Image (cartoon, rainbow, N blue to C red; front, side, top):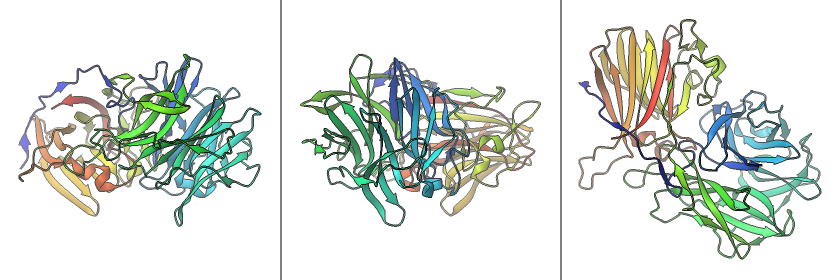
Length: 506
């Protein structure tokens, strides 16, 4: 039975935490790639099926970041041939060369087209029309340039029949996307599975290559090798892997996919991804893979990670949005669709959903960025507010025809958990994540959190359901993404008036 409840949580007041534990980009921002121009740093991440693709951020100090837009903002740049969970934009490389920013990535939704290259003079955009590299099918492309200005493409050759086939390289023409020579193998890593995510750098007298090895799960790590030429042969670091948390009790796991950057003072740093599992064994990560920062020291010509070097300001993740601005905030994205066709502005304020819940492309989404949080959506006549990991793993509240229903979807199971009547056409829907209640077994096995679904019926908030958050985790759903807040409507007459989100302590 529904029960009346209230939120008595307090706002987060901590201002900073050590970078070994606090991400610079909390939430679903994996596969970071970074470059510096003067005193400014720019960072982009993977975004998978969500459009616009490849969010890009700016910083002047490496620790505080502001999103300045997305790189792939047109369907020519991010073609949608094959939709679905964990398709779309994979690992990428962002670099500045010859007065331009260059971005190269893999679009798994248009996999046969090969790697995708765009460029811009302003990293906030607009970015150019895409150039495709059909001779380089695979994932995780890297761009670098030698002293003569020759550009080199390095990537992980992969298809979805044979699987991974190693790290390959070739010189290429950036304007046409044609390879200048047959591609050839270079360093294949230290022998662990899934050697991928190559990045090459000219540092001093050597060319260095970093790889991600061990898979992007708990065995993830960073390995390094060096050569006097970008083509090799490469000498592996004698203490590979140079960075990992595998088989440790560190609260940040799956670390890897690293990209180096040098500051104006000559010191080096590195961004990398990690996941923060919670709950009983095997641990469940719900925010996706996040972006972290560490320092780099050089010992005997090899990179040594100093993950404790930086104190990271805890980002202000709270927001309120009444959609009154001329454009949507860049936080809003759509899976397998695009915001311009998912929502329409109402002349009296707020948004309509013209397609009204026919598919995942009819939901407007924003990343969940905290472990404990509360979010509210004010809707009129009809509306839907979900916590979404993918189209088969979500929960939420749907209001229509004077009734609010709590819905749970886990795989092929779809269930209405509870319902309550609402007395007013304007209704507030609430989602909340909080510390889990221990299960009634000797060791108190629990998921990472509990997710509570509530609605203001006109007489105060009524709790419709409290659910185990493990069912909205990567360990259950699989894939590469993290939790999203998702908004929609069961029919076009519904109107979304506002959304608010704030982190909490339970």
